[in-house]
Image 1 (cartoon, rainbow, N blue to C red):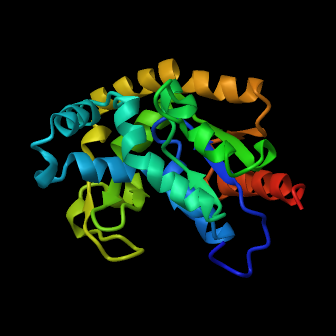
Image 2 (image 1 turned 120 degrees about the vertical axis):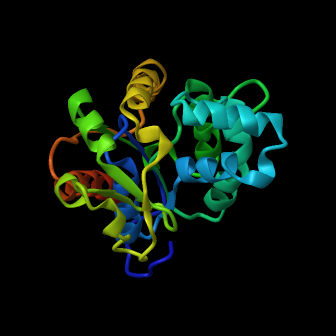
Length: 245
């Protein structure tokens, strides 16, 4: 682990939740607290599909279309992009946090030709150290948060403050790195609904499968303040990984 003051054994934490649940925020907070690596799959994919130099690749063009319209990308494309990166970190014994992956069954459990995220993690960590945290948020809260969200163009840190951002968006900079704030194409209300439908159809079955297979699981109330959500997640992670010692 990156911080010698962090006493937890390495493991993997997969944070699930609908759009606006605060998955990226919680993953970053957990990274700071534990020294685990926050693996921002969504940010990696977003940069790749919007890279001008990649637009000659038909797979990237299709992935960009899916991304910008709120649909989930082809699992094979996602696994191809991130699989080796995840495997390299895991094989070094580094703890990992996932805030935006997996989103489809194939991404989680793989295909005949490709390992899924759980295949990669299970080759390195015991099942008891692969933790599943589900942040439960109502659809109304999800839409409200996303329509008021901005993201730092430099470090991808999300910023949600309806009162401060209203009417003076152009004056605000990222409090972490000073980068300019921007609105993601995904945060249009009509696209958010598409994403909510996709979460219900494709991602919730992954959570049920992981629970059935016996992975440690905790449901978190995501309608509370971010620090309360984090306290619940960290307590779950701490207690679960301390048992591995």
